[in-house]
Length: 193
Image (tube, rainbow, N blue to C red; front, side, top):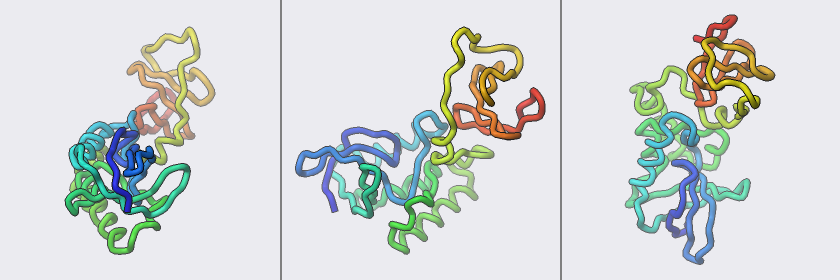
């Protein structure tokens, strides 16, 4: 267990802390993943996390270390932050590192995620929410120089890229089109639905 204080948030599930030895450490909550900053519900998730953690010292139960980050669980007054985010529908169960969780907690996370989804809480209000690990794989790109920001129709502007009249950039992946804001559409000709 590490005693620390949160000093910066990357997202609701990834933040920097200052430990008791005055070292800055990067933490990722084990078994869950919250929306990225450019995704819908990211601000609500981060707000809930910061309210839950407050300005007090927190305890981090270490589960693993990878990619220069510590994977762990954070509890404040006996209440697990990961479970709080899942119950509010502001995070996904993360299959990449859920194996590091103790079995009872892994079951609780899965149950909380399923219940939030069935009750359409938080990000589950959207018809097809894009998980953060999928969102991170969406290539982020800029318009070629000299291109107008919005036309009255969808058109190809770069390799498998589409620009529409709403001003949002999209990336075509077969018949599926992904917006830079995390939205997902089907494409038939010049029509996105």
